[in-house]
Amino acid sequence: MTIKAETVIIGGGPCGLFQIFELGLHGVHAHLVESLPHVGGQCAELYPDKPIYDIPAIPVCGARELVDRLMDQIKPFNAEFHLGQQVTVVEKLKDGSFHLKTSVGTEFQTPTVVVAGGVGSFEPMPLKVGDIETFTGRSLFYSIKDPLLHQGKRLMVLGGGDSALDWVLNLQDKAKSMTLVHRRHDFRGAPASVAKMKALVEKGKMDLHYGNVSDYSENAGELCKVEITSLEGKITTHPVDHLLVFFGLSPKLGPIAEWGLNLDKDKIQVDTESFQSNVPGIYAIGDISTYPGKKKLILSGFHEAALAAFAIKAQLNPGKKVHLQYTTTSSVIHQRLGVESPKKKAG
Ligand code: FAD
Image (cartoon, rainbow, N blue to C red):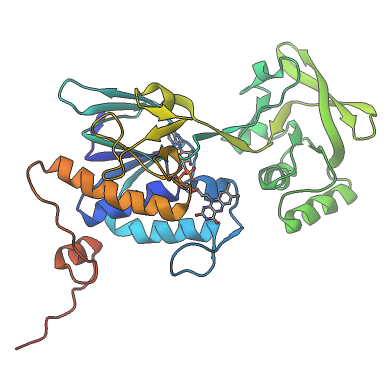
């Protein structure tokens, strides 16, 4: 079934989220598609615990906190979220509207699209050892979709960040054996998780090695052994059923490059009045957009979202002027926000 939408926002970073708000003020309902299983873009993925100091009127705000605040702010507009799916197809239909399709088969028809794809879709950084990639989804995993799948298995986790540590702690007592391999002595993950993991190692409940995977063996088409070269160059071999790799995520522009949009160094060229691209009906805001003087800041993306919303409202209501209304005084906006309008003074 194709979802009919007024607008579809591609990308759930801070700018895509704020786009929902700005459209909502104009009474435009949005669907948002995000390739990760959660919203937040770079803020959530690259620096969740770092403080941001240049959000107007908030002297300091954690990156994750900013995403939470945005989610709170857009609640009244009941946007629909389609997470864990990448928009792969954007094609123009004869009537001027667009057909969108995602990696899991969700389809939309919409007259307007806002690309808020940032630096692209985040994809796991691969383990590069021979042809080990061919085991992906069978005995090599870059994400855990169903923890039960790994129960009772000999697990080896690679990585030193929060994802690696969280899954070590989560699966250790369910696995037949657990080995963590990290390429250096420092861990990027939360100190509390590192301490818990080291306590398990001390109790003999799991193994910890510092080094890199240097080779592997297979049996009947599945991984069965992994060779680790330690930081000192010593080689050890470990029996393994499932290898779980958490090297972090890196952004890739991906399918956005194929939608017929004018690009400049992987960024979508827009005009600064409407933030529309060369394809009428497709807008671009945030880090993915470019124009003379562009600065890749959240603040700039918020401004771009406000102007794109005016342009989209105008496109959806041809011939009608889109008036500027203040959130402080507009009763229409108060209704949309679900807040009470201040009573007019009598007399
Ligand atoms: P992103 O945050 O990149 O989000 C884009 C989203 O789109 C991603 O989640 C991606 O998965 C998704 N996506 C892409 N393609 C598709 C597709 N085809 N289908 C579905 N989803 C897709 N800025 C500041 O203003 N102040 C700061 O202090 C600051 N500090 C920073 C510190 C660091 C370490 C970094 C890396 C950046 C910092 N920035 C800062 C920059 C800021 O994070 C970015 O400007 C901001 O995240 C851009 O938001 P966005 O919504 O445009 O894109």
